[in-house]
Image 1 (cartoon, rainbow, N blue to C red):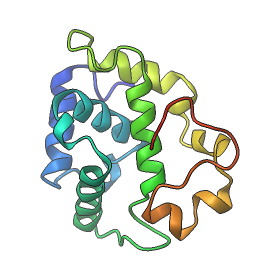
Image 2 (cartoon, one colour; image 1 turned 60 degrees about the vertical axis):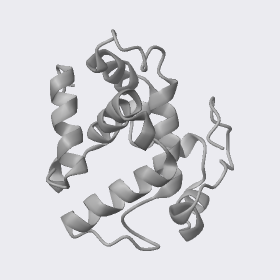
Image 3 (cartoon, rainbow, N blue to C red; image 1 turned 120 degrees about the vertical axis):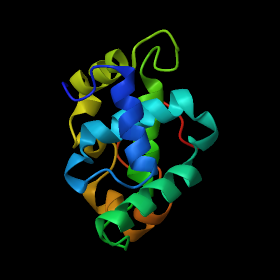
Image 4 (cartoon, rainbow, N blue to C red; image 1 turned 60 degrees about the horizontal axis):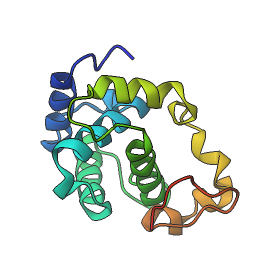
Length: 147
């Protein structure tokens, strides 16, 4: 977790996501969570499901990634991941460095890109319905509410 040592690095990442200049190669699992943490803290007005949908679809389009039933934006994963970011103790506390919250998130189960498969079957998670809208977990409940 060396890409985001200071809150300024989080802000730079967020700015590049929002203005659609972040290169596709830099839009990693860790960067998704770094962006979510920054948005939850600094832009709570845009930290809802529809705002994230709009932001990520626009970034995908800038990357040339089609947003279809099988690629691009995935609503269920986005909302579950936003919930995971908000679930980190102290993630919203302004005096806690975002890097500390991200480090805690990344060393736990959510740091693995396959964490979500503990809650959803592949069939359900990768269905067109789950890509387009929120679908409840079919294997194990999340420890937070996403509804």
